[in-house]
Amino acid sequence: MSKVRPGLEEAVAGIEDGSTVMIGGFGRAGQPVELIDALIAQGAGDLTVVSNNAGNGDLGLAALVGSGRVRKIVCSFPRQSDSYVFDATYRAGEIELELVPQGNLAERIRAAGAGIGAFYTPTGVGTLVAEGKETRTIEGRDYILEYPIRADWALVSAFKADRWGNLVYRKTARNFGPIMAAAARTTVVQVDEVVELGALDPEAVVTPGLFVDRVVAVGERAWMRNGAFVGVSGAAGAAAGAASAPGTAARDAGTRDAGAAA
Image (cartoon, rainbow, N blue to C red):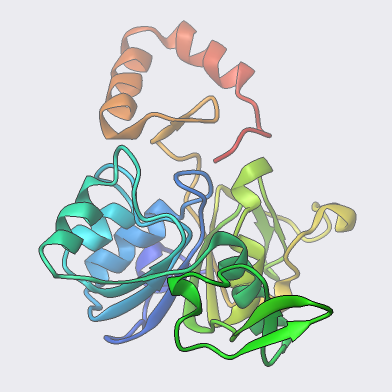
């Protein structure tokens, strides 16, 4: 049994118009940029995206929003200094936003994967978040009822996988990946490397292959260097520098921290 797909196109095949797609990542850490690019190329539209953020700069999720393919985004943190793509799209009335407090967002996703029907939380009581929701007082404290968030697809970035889909992550890139993998009907994962069965320490496996349907290896990502996000221009500069100074490139490769967020 192998869940490995030969390329990104095959990994995202079948995502249909109108799908709900969870996209992992906390800002740029753990964002499955290559899978998002493949989704853009694949052409599915009218999407509902569930993600912690609404995109950074021009890459990844921001590019998907900018392509006009996202009808609605469910997230906890839609605005920051470089979220100008979402900001412009939202102000133009071209995308719907459902704002969910971060803890509620994580728990609603986790609840879907755990088979929990609903849960009470104090977060949001007395705010716009509580409008139209059932409320209950428990031991003198007010709570609101929240329901799980499920998805048709989850796009997740991990560090390594085996062919059965067992996953290990790289530090903070772990963030939303494990709970999203469990909350979607079909989970697609990009990894730096697919390793042989038995190469992953079972104690280090965070997402069991049970929750993974497709795996694609993307290699070491050009937009990362030494575990830091460098973006398109930075990646181009790094490539040019490597061509002119192979000794520097070799030194960089030798000092790369495999545990850095990516």
